[in-house]
Image 1: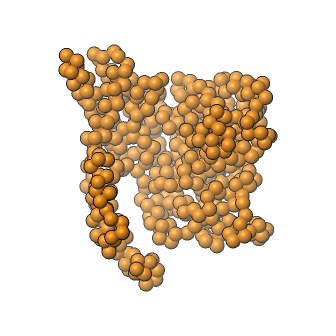
Image 2: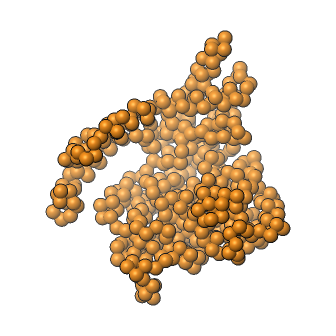
Image 3: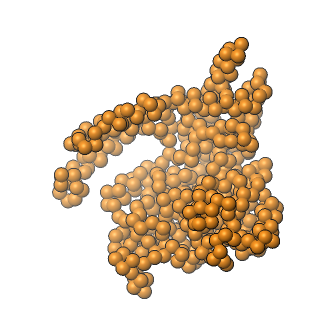
Length: 480
């Protein structure tokens, strides 16, 4: 079995096997005509259950043949222009090249003696990102597994910087449209979900700073401590950006840590035309970015950035076998000193390759395109009497609901929209997401593919209307 180890003696075999794998995937990309096949769990699960993992196939070609049937054939393909569901982006080629390199070399970014140049490349990208945010030379950060981990670490730092050790008194303030990882982080940090105060949003789904101020004052009157305010720059459902300047002022007034969850909106950092939408982010104590959302990177590629690097000490632990304290005195750059993770992939290489090939403006122009497309999609929806659209988008998300002309029962309309989404997914012709607005069922386009056109949006809206009407028509026949 040593023939399967990647080393100097197997370099040719590695080249052949990887080339064959790449060719299989490239062929799928070239021939895929819709984002999904419509396969069901009931159809696919028995095939995977039948695989005997204790009886290997012996070579990669046979394994790739099997993989075609178990995965590649039925995968959901985000590169297709009618994949319009979640915050999944098509990826750029330089990043995929970086993925191939980092997987083969397999550097671990926890210590210098496991990564060398990889450590410095990651640090350079952190410096680049903090510069884009507007932090000064004291800024720092570290790559993470994703937005949830970044939010967790940010709130860990906030907890440790809080003026009390009594966890029962600490409160976190976030909008009602903030990401669920805020509540999850509070629980993991020993605060409990009740420690998160939900602040109402305005008609554009942005945190209302006046109500935030009132909640902060009530918190202080009750003898509690405002630990952190989480502003969102790109809510998952609506792409809304909270009023960052106003929130920053309130955070300063109350001595609270300000964190900006820009997992979605971070693409604006590279935008040639829309960077102003993030004005005020430079006042935050910490920022979450997900390059794998709006920088068109493969999962995972994310980071937590902080305004003052000294705050990262709260994640620092020393182990004699790994990063003994003497390495700090010797100025050896160990990234584990600032990370919640120990072993960690060199995910930064994907962004490095992207910037070196495309440049920041190239990334930003792609994100600008999908934001402009969302505005065009808004115009289509607003002009179409069949649909109710919720928020004029700041980023690239549209939330809407099919409204049949002959039906007035909100519950029945809910069921029609749910059915339409499921039927569309089962057909494989397009994939859209769903959410709730005021306890009513809505549908959602998350537009992250510059190849998607207004014609695609219009066609998918027609498909949704057709499925909804089919459901309502069948129900009327049953009722009759």
